[in-house]
Length: 417
Image 1 (cartoon, rainbow, N blue to C red):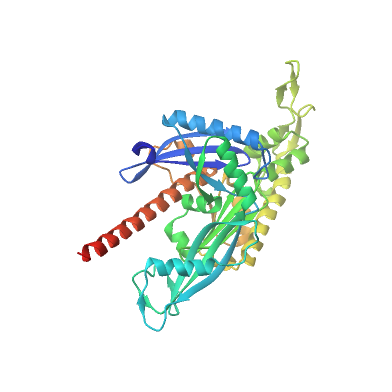
Image 2: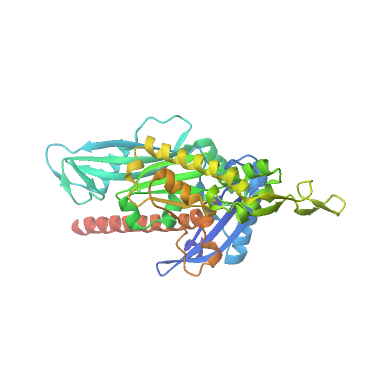
């Protein structure tokens, strides 16, 4: 790999509705947009890969489009992992360093984290992330970086984000078939948070809900650290399917009606409003025009759409509230809730969230990268942009650690002469 390629970061977000390959480059310490490719998803069902062949084809087409835009070959990518198989668990562990007080080094920190991560997991589970929440040094809690401090006993509260090993391997295999080597994997809820949250929100306590097509990924932060992760089995497609069944129209028309006329608060829609449904014309098998639903167009009350959508919105946020309560973090949302993802743009969704969670709620749009097209600064691209930011931050931290280790070794060898 040449020096120019080593400055590129490529991420792959393969969801139920779309596949996005996003490329950025590091120039003078700044992450700049380079190119992207988007394709409609194929071979996906409920956020999981159902058919490897079609899914790999869609990824390959998105990657080729990104390559054309970047004018560089793409060989390695960081891949997002989502779906109901992702689960989070909190653990605590630590080490004792004897009767004499010692300075805490990176080795002691790693040993404490290794002790905390040694929880019993089912054999099919893989650890996606090890995220320290806080360190406790000689019963002093609330420490984020204990290196350089002195003490006898070091403990750590740790959050483990885990996933199904088989599902994760299917994603890796699919990317490999598309010609991409997987450099790392990231939980999509954490990636979305990276793109839409401020430092103050992380400190005060906030829940990020990334509403995708099939699922909603959750990540809760408190006092600057991850406190809870989970995935709910409801996404934007469930709203669309409810409309398709209730209105007796195609899924495609239901999606268009949801985006144009949908609202999740019945009383916010005037009673007199009427809209036309069932009249979308498509080409028939012989090239003639035919109604998309096979029936003539008809008028329905716009409120009828809201009467279908509002119960699903309330179900989603009731499930979210119960999940946070079960995780012990419902009362920790000092900064409220941030809703992102393609499903976040449905009108009236925030009203339901605030009504059920009893906290302020806003739509989260991703932080724009330098030179990035404005159309990517939308909630549906929060995961992809967050993956770039998370990967960049991780690389910077690793480089800093390696630089510190090299300096320490240099000092040791210099002192031996």
